[in-house]
Length: 193
Image (cartoon, rainbow, N blue to C red; front, side, top):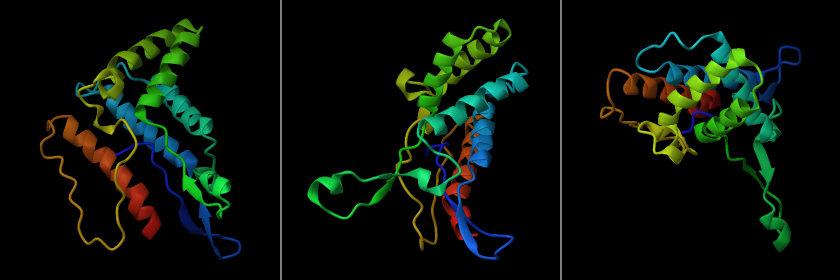
């Protein structure tokens, strides 16, 4: 399950009264930021994570979406399927691969190296150290949320069991609950509200 997954939603236009599809990227950036902030605080609920750390996280999250061209335009979620052009078939669009915690971490590494402000150095150093445990590339012990989502919630399925009972109950399980709730909201509730 990828914390960066985002879906469109249908809202009723207040002026025209018609339904329209929107992509609320600002809210998603805040959701992802809060999830990463929870991870950064860890099971110790560290006081080392402050508003400056949150801002660093949020800017990097926003840059991850921007790097893929994902904006508030719902069409920015998709790319043209170029395989059809070669065969003379009808063009289709497919959803872009979303950023991951691993790609976000690499962005934080680059930003830390480029940082010239000594006031930010500690925050970058802290993030790089504590977030490494969530990164698959570094064999992090909690890297289960680093990567693309590997399944979709299916319409019409009456029951889905996401078993997190084997996770450590003091921190890993509540973190998984937070991430799963945000993911289910994104994938299911938005589409059916």
